[in-house]
Length: 613
View 1 (cartoon, helix red, strand yellow):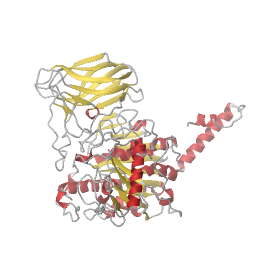
View 2 (cartoon, rainbow, N blue to C red):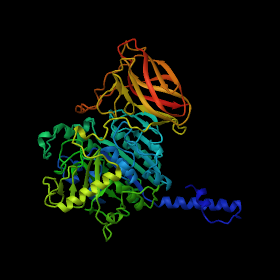
View 3 (cartoon, rainbow, N blue to C red):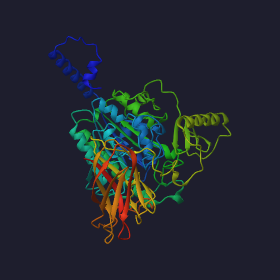
View 4 (cartoon, one colour):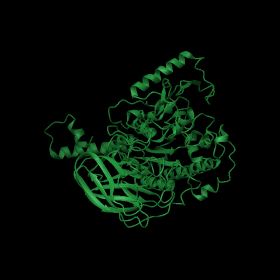
């Protein structure tokens, strides 16, 4: 609500003079500013695919994470904190305080990761309360406006919006919707931008969200970090040691170590600016580890709903308010972060949707009268488990005593039939409430629902405040012989375009009718240039020629150790200025096809950009 709206709703005599009204406006602005000035800054670090056991404060002897550990030592540590089995659902729950299936997030790519537009985010609330808001890193809840972070409460955004990125060195990124090329290692770059944001806003309250993309694969880390780990003896391994890839463990820990050093850079800057005392700093991760490595002996990893797949560290440091060295043993989850942060900082939450999370302030401030016990549900696709303070019912219906048996080795459902029945009933009711599918047999990779099917919600295009609409390959559908460059859509491109019957389709919702400049990020081998292509939407068509030839080699300087086979090896794409296409307002399919193919193939396509003129 702006100042005039506030005044409109107040009981003011109608006979005030203009000078008096100006004075009242000034006083209200001054009051709003003063209220905001007294609120703490907030810095939130989110790691990507880092397990509970990947930090030294949780007992990992294979490396040290002094800066992350310091947040637990100097603040509050939650001993049993739960997130989702994979990336985008956790981000949705953190941003909204609601289970991700309520928010429209059902997958990690092909549009399934988008946060519904009627959801209000944590950043929306802080921005409305007078905070300057910035996000620097992996977004993973929508790429096009109004799903973009700049439309979800963040004044400033630098990073990438997809689920994972295939280039960690000198990466192609974006800044507030405009493409940019970073110079250096991704984690360093994101930290640099976060530090710039803090410097620029040191005199006013700010919310600085830093969702790092490590240790998510591909396995890439600066040589200086790798040199300390490449021959390192891994003294503590997983209980499934025969399944552990030791070099992947080494690289993951090197990536975490680099992240820890960058977190230290931010903490040091807060000290230098004399902001640390009144800054709430938070650290957590988005799911379990992305590999078989030591994780405290827990069962499960990323993609599973067992303890090891969903337990995350959560550290909160705010010297002015939170007790030092306080350990919280009650269970809590990502859904609790929005109501807790709003309560701690005095920021009113926005929206009227019911929250699933609750305010943890009494636990964090060590108040008498702890919060009552609760249930936390974890889901990925049709699989659901539920955690209480003492038990976990897994997705198969097995029951475990998590205090006596934290590694989930013995099913006690037959011994505790009343508890098993109660939790199974709770899961069934929760499934029904959220419209979840029935349980299915375990599949490869923990794929959810329709896997990589393109989301049925169309892609919005044509907003004056954000005229560039990116249409990456991950959001499109290949038809004919066209396919993606890998099984993981997030950072992929379309390949094998060889026939006039081939198509690439993006489902659009055009918000503004008008002329759009068309850019295509492409590569094309020598001798194959010159294909005639057609881009069409409803009745309008644009034809263009592919050229010049551009066939750069695949990058060989990105990976410290080989990346997983399901992930694309990247290359440098060139921009083809295809011309201007008129788009009518409304729903339809944007189709890209070839009319003439003089060579063996047309081109590889990473992305189409539609820019409203």
